[in-house]
Amino acid sequence: MSNKDIDWDGLGFGYIKTDKRYVSYYKDDAWDEGALISDENIVMNECAGVLQYAQTIFEGLKAYRSKNGDIVTFRPDLNAKRMRDSALRLEMPAFPEDRFVEAVLKTVRANADYVPPYGSGATLYIRPFMYGKNPVIGVKPASEYEFRIFTTPVGPYFKGGVKPLTLKVSDFDRAAPHGTGNIKAGLNYAMSLHAIVTAHEEGYDENLYPDAATRTYVEETGGANFIFVTKDKKKIVTPRSDSILPSITKRSLITVAKDYLGLEVEECKIPIDRLSDYSECGLCGTAAVISPVGKIADHGKEIIFGDDPEKPGEICMKLREILTGIQLGEIEAPDGWIYKV
Image 1 (cartoon, rainbow, N blue to C red):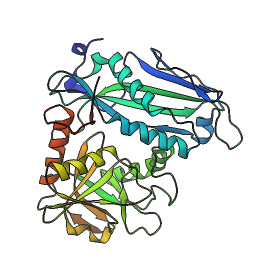
Image 2 (cartoon, rainbow, N blue to C red; image 1 turned 135 degrees about the horizontal axis):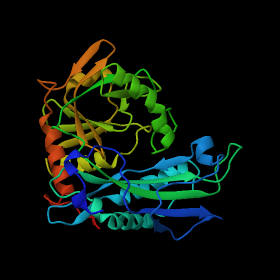
Image 3 (cartoon, one colour; image 1 turned 180 degrees about the vertical axis):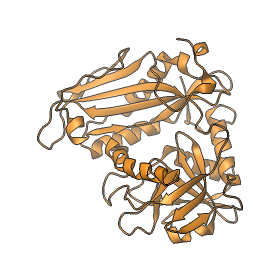
Image 4 (spheres, rainbow, N blue to C red; image 1 turned 90 degrees about the horizontal axis):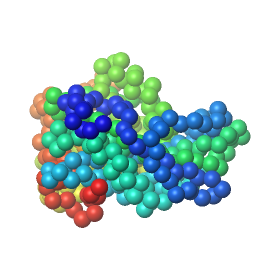
């Protein structure tokens, strides 16, 4: 299939099989050399560690068609490091970071026809993941693992423009103190499914999860970090917690805020009852860069950001514009951020 056979304008955020995926196996205390394969199906034993005890981790990043026609990826070295940290926390063998980056570039190169054209708003989503594969019936780590990378073209996160979200302060906990909230483990996302379905049924787009210990501080949503803007528009504030996933997008936006917009940046505990002190709120992650938040419902109380909760905030939109410009080759990137495929 070539890219001319795909309706880029009609793409949603879902799975479409591409030509190749990367696979490497871990057995007898070593990773094999890995290879690109065509088969998208996985066969495993019914007692595989991932099925019995959820021993699985993953990453998410994208490939872009830049303004000059190059295919590029954005900071895959940080995904490699984060996946290493996730693996060690779940007693899994870390896939070597240099091989991770090499495998990402190789997989994207093999699926180049699926990288959407510049200006379409679509991208090639890249999903590296790893899981315990051999039979495990006692509660213990698996001894054999499979590392894979697949890709799928996805449409723009914001179809029809950027519209602020409405959140609710959740009654559920996202992660326990000293738990696994700071790694990208599949079990964390399974924990959030009931809460997000409940939020949708109640008319909200997402949840704000408080810290589980005191339920008074902002942590994150089910799949994104928070960014707040002070009312004087001079400072970006982000929550500090050992239970928050270290977002690559958030770290990149902080650099953009400081170096491109000249803003101050502070990481600190943010009380939920002080959210009205901020003029803007955004959720940051791979899919949308920044999703502006218009209001948050806190058990009968509404927190409104900006003069109009239906309009995205000025600073959030500037951050989004600059970071997407860097990713697409429209704005010069800091050293080491862009990897050419």
